[in-house]
Length: 188
Image (cartoon, rainbow, N blue to C red; front, side, top):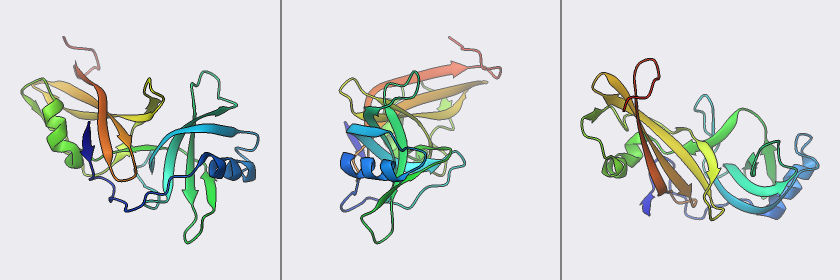
């Protein structure tokens, strides 16, 4: 496992919500009333689809076991924020998700994970972006992050998976590499 601390400022004392704090925030929220969590699987810095991030160290996108689950979902996903200068947590609603680390912050580790040669343009983005939240077989939350580049005339994507512990991202699990043409068709 590799620790990566860039992309989000390192936090001296991460303040993730507890299951009890999440349940209290859900009970106060019109959108989440009647939903409850059991075990928290993990949290990541919060980001919107447009790339806007919530206040560092206070805004999280989390996965948890709970009920009721949305149709077809294996876990609950939710955004939550601790109010400034307060211990009160509130649910956040919108097109939000788990932030992936910026390419620049994981460049060294990402290049080591790469098995193809001749790929250009990977890990050149300037900031965090939205990833896909999931669970490891152990039940720990992960975010799958696709980094795009070029391989000759084709497009190349490497997907890295991370956990987050409040002080940084940690790469875990399998690395997926894909090559596709300009029409999106896989290239062997």
